[in-house]
Amino acid sequence: MLHRSILGLATLLTLSGCGVGEIEGYTPSSAITFAAPFRTMAQHDSLMAEREWPYLVSIPGQGALLYYGSRHINDPDDPQIADIAARWEAFGPTVAVTENRLGWYGGGLDRAVSKHGEFGAVLHLARRDGVPIYTLEPSWEDEVAEVTRAFPVEEATLFYTLRVFLSERSEGRSADDIDDLAAHLLRKRGSRPGLEGSLPDLTALDALWNERFAHFGPWRDLPPEAIHPSPNPTRLQALANVVNEARDRHAARIILDFISQGERVFAIAGGSHVVKQEPVLRAGAER
Figure 1 (cartoon, rainbow, N blue to C red):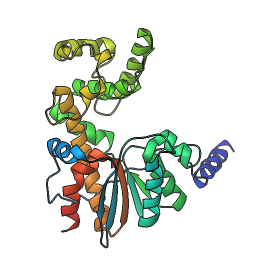
Figure 2: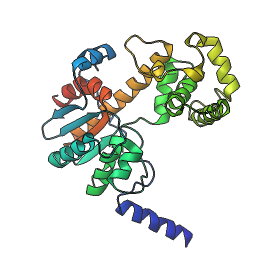
Figure 3: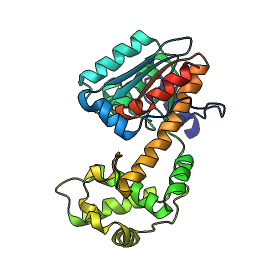
Figure 4: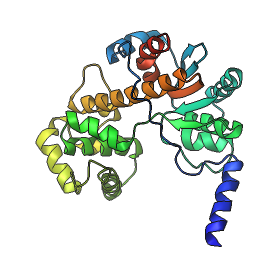
């Protein structure tokens, strides 16, 4: 009886526009290859020096693409949300793909955006209209495998922990609260497939930091841009570059696969990803 009740609740949530669990990944065909290079970070920075978001890539044809390169927001009243909805209606997609692994949001469009940002708007529109939607993210196993081919596993664990820590760290927290947050994130990130046991606790993280990264200053005070992609990267930024490059390759393969099937693809990702992927997508769609 309980199992039947849970199934009924899941069905009700889905029909009312609420996500249930993370959206599915998609495995692109192994036949998908790239006919052009991705833009580099230096090319990206030069192109965007005098441009603003969103960055839009439109590819017409039997298989069509509208790729929305967004700026990150969580405000349902931001003009970007109305713009996404209007472009969705005009384009009429048959499949949607989005950055991030999105899931339950417990309400309509406003709640979806509040929880998942601009990506939540596309999730809501896809669920509302019955359009299949997939994540552009590679599996954790595949992403971690790429990163650990380039960097030691303990540095990958450090990077993944700090990436979230620096975004969730806030002023006014006590030193104990800061360490509790970091320890929680380290346990969570350090349990990912391929990273297990590499940094068992904050003592190990501190030791690694002091051995290899002390010149950056205390990691607890690190500015977020220290682990952002960069055309002239430090070692930490080089880790970010490898992660982003792995994600860009996977996303481009998914989009090209759907285009080759004749789908009308509405895609959304942070603008920098779209800028870097554009040459690959245009060349691949024109084959």
